[in-house]
Length: 549
Ligand code: FAD
Ligand code: SIN
Image (cartoon, rainbow, N blue to C red; front, side):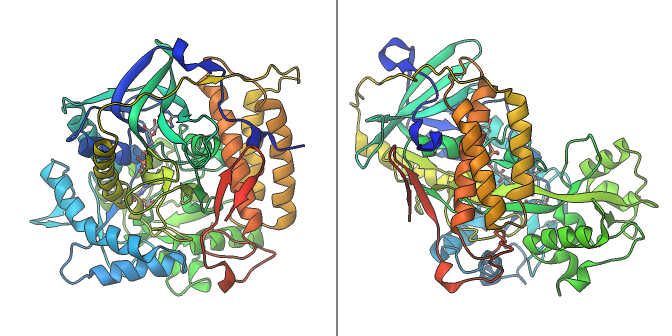
């Protein structure tokens, strides 16, 4: 029996000529840093609609803490930032992309400052933080540890004030529309089918679509991501027949606050950059036994070390010791994290912060070129939804806001070029799609969601092996037969679970196929890095098979 994930093209039945249409030049799916930056650029050349599925501002961007990596200090150098990015990515970064992104980063920070983002300063100079894997202090930050909020609010206000941009919040994109519907070499993306609680199903027809719908952390039980990070972008591209890259590469952050019953909020790597130690409950450090950079080793090393240490000591958490920073200084430098600790009565002058690793950043995504073009004509992608090859097998801390902004701008420019190419007239054919009625048992969706997250954490987490990955694939295919066969009308939660299952299926396929250890992908049964695997892993759906390159 073919896996249900290959068969499903659209999540709902529809006749495009029967649904209300909205027309625009550029449709941007995603209102985080990448989507908003691309929209601002594209609006210089046409009309733009930006969608976000939740309330305005809600995105991974909003929660970013540590900051944005860019070479600012004259004593630092672009070459060093490039080297740090390449070293961390373990030989599969795309060097051209790394150079393009890192060289554009300082200008990108300047542009944000010109637009009013107030990065933290020491006198006239930007204050620069230090994070794991960086050999210099080069992280610009705002409001101490609320850099993402400062950037998101600024870009949102700028986009809102741009006459050619319309922002639709609470508007869920279900699927990318392609003409012809089943993809193939000639398919062109012509818009998206969307659902809004007030307006129902609609078609937003666009000459160019930019996918910037973010990451997939919610697929794992432990995650730093907000609840909207359900892998919708991955699932939409996959169903539309677009190429996905490096899906096995999920980055785990070493330190999220670990308090039973509470969501796992991030404790920024910048805290370790300010001198905090990782310790056991007796206050003893263990990272120097694992890596010469100790607490500031790249985050895959630190996450694995914590997991190993917890295993050896039979514990379920470790601690951050910030006592030498002192509560007063900590509160000034990290006001949001300080507040979170206060909420749980943790006295930072005398007590330790309990922490645990968690899924954090999806390195894989829609495979794009240096201009943001995917394998589907008319479809561009940027930000966490895309895979540019910048990060290779492991992302250097604070390089993703930089990537979202640099490639947001570039992708917006590419959209303008595409608009010029397609010109004025453009009439896609009508699309009719029917999802066959299924008589299979209905499974409890919240149970599936929780069970998926648990099994992904246990079996497709920081350390993996063939047996557990294969079992996970079988379980996900079983669930898929009962969840992917249904149509969940007017129910973004149901569609999100279908997307989570679809994205998880592709992630596990990638993790099984890459029979080596590289960066964030650690195989217990293949512990060495294999030079034959120094390449990207690309996957595409056809109704007949999963094409792997
Ligand atoms: P997002 O900001 O996640 O935006 C995604 C958008 O897509 C949202 O508007 C969402 O509503 C929309 N969307 C999703 N699905 C749909 C759908 N089906 N229909 C319509 N809209 C949809 N990186 C750094 O470089 N530095 C940091 O300090 C840092 N700290 C972080 C801290 C936390 C807690 C987290 C979670 C991440 C952090 N990261 C950091 C990573 C970084 O924030 C993200 O990679 C980056 O912000 C992604 O931006 P984006 O625009 O691609 O996606
Ligand atoms: C953090 O502040 O630790 C997150 C930085 C990042 O994800 O790049």
